Image (tube, rainbow, N blue to C red):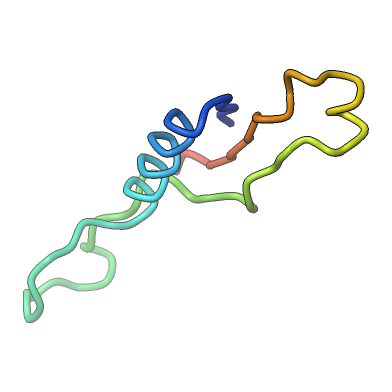
Length: 73
């Protein structure tokens, strides 16, 4: 779970999680079985969560927060 407060931080987190959740690309026609293929390191869980209007009302500094969740495999 990562909470980012700036759009540049969020972009770094988003790109890292996306890249780690995709298995490595291998050339087509490689003689490998499915169990020999590289596995991704992360599994993305849900969508990004942003604060509700009630949370922003109680804590205005939370308005730019974005929480992203990934599971380590």
